[in-house]
Length: 469
Image (cartoon, rainbow, N blue to C red; front, side, top):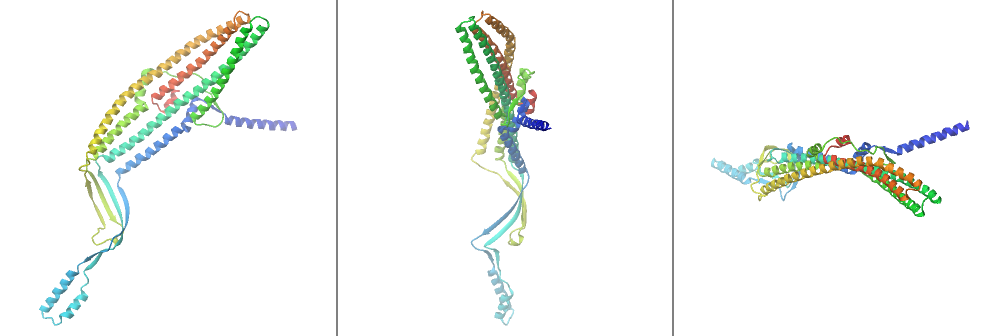
């Protein structure tokens, strides 16, 4: 019973440990690595934030078409209050009345004057205090702004489009880096394994050489060649291990530094490519990010030209005002007002005209840049298509030569054991087989790297890119 409990506990511990190990280890296919990079890469996250900001800016520009409503409060202090004094008229009126009274035979003009002074109020009125407050609501609705509002809105939408293009370009660039880093890591991992197999073969060869030396079949010099080859094989193997370890670190940085041990599970093989060169040229001329940015820049310059033209046209707007604190108003201030306003810049030092000329020249410059970038795109597509074909041809040649190299190695191994071949000939044959295996892996990496860069030039989206892999 005790043994059964101990065995159960040990099995449980082993199960838990295996769960933890599995949780920490990450087996990534090439598409898994791309998905992680699209989520974690800092450049992509930064570009997404720029895009979000551009969306808010374009929404704010849309608001320029709507009326502007303000609540304005003003507190004012002036040097003295403003009064309206018409007592001179009052005095004249009283004097005229007294004269009429006297002329009509009035018996007591002094008493009549005193009565009028008492009955007629003062003709002095305070128009404005030396301290006053005004609170009003105002509305302004643009009617015609010389295309400036619409052009500004179009500019902001184009800035949003630029942010989208930059995001697609960044994602495509990161995917290309992931593909290159993934297969470079797989290449160095395979090279390390090839170097390990080569080291074992040389160690076996040294053992055979040692036996032949003891039996007097080969010379000491012949045996020394095997020892030298063994030392070089150890050095190459250790270097390959360091290169592979560094490559994993760099790959982890590219996809966004995830925790745990990474295992790359995709096979080392050439990515699918069934399209011809003309297809990729056509695709690149439609979707290349650099070309799209130039087209967008040209559209932005057209809107900038409209803004400069609009500065030479009148601005027309409707407005309205409503006084909220009406009890504080003077006799001459209205409670509300509506109207139209129009303004026209008559002279601004020809700045707008010069801006229009400058913008036209900039558009012409962009047109030349578009022609240049199209030529570069065609050249780039041809270059990477050529590199893909060369890598395929190299791989096929190496596959054909590998069988011959293996036969050659087999022959020299047998001949060496018989004392006919030298140690150097066996080492050369071993090295030749190793080199072919490494070159095959390099040809696959060269193809995949070139193909990833080819897809990047074509400016396809992240989803399309993943479908191409």
